[in-house]
Image 1 (cartoon, helix red, strand yellow):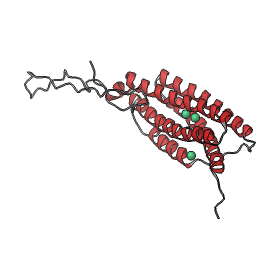
Image 2 (tube, rainbow, N blue to C red):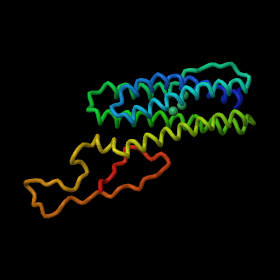
Image 3 (cartoon, protein in one colour):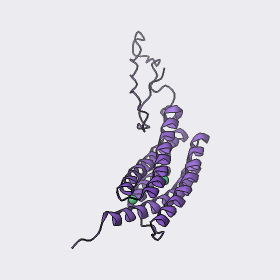
Image 4 (tube, protein in one colour):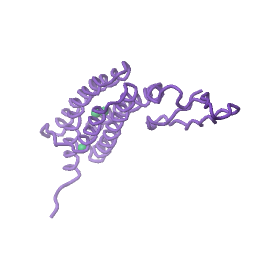
Length: 204
Ligand code: FE
Ligand code: ZN
Ligand code: FE
């Protein structure tokens, strides 16, 4: 007979996130080192500090629930980090590497947002309101980190990676009559809630 409860699943997920944050501390250090842009490095370093706080916050949550502070290997974030490290080994130019680091970082943030969204909801439904408040603080930090990365991507890093002449309407081919310029791409309306960083931005 099955006897596991949502409370058990909740503790399991907390342990998964605890391990995930610890894996991310190592990964964020590497990503900060690999960044070729001061603002991007700064974003990773800032989120690294926040992540150390998130580990402590989870320790507080275990304390509130009278549970042992313990991690349980998170396969999901391990896979995301693994993909990120293979990208870091590629021989990309600096601007492309920055765009790729953002892409990897956002995969991690979205994974965490999913995990903490569930943890907050389960904490509430199980009546652990103090724990829910702490977990919500972390969820807010993950969302802000994701938005920061979108802002950096859309604020120039993607354009730099695309290179000069890309997405411009002033190129001329010698074989074609210069009468008409290429139609300008219509910019996709941007959502403010974590729109994908790779959305192309039409230049003005
Ligand atoms: Fe985190
Ligand atoms: Zn996990
Ligand atoms: Fe995070």
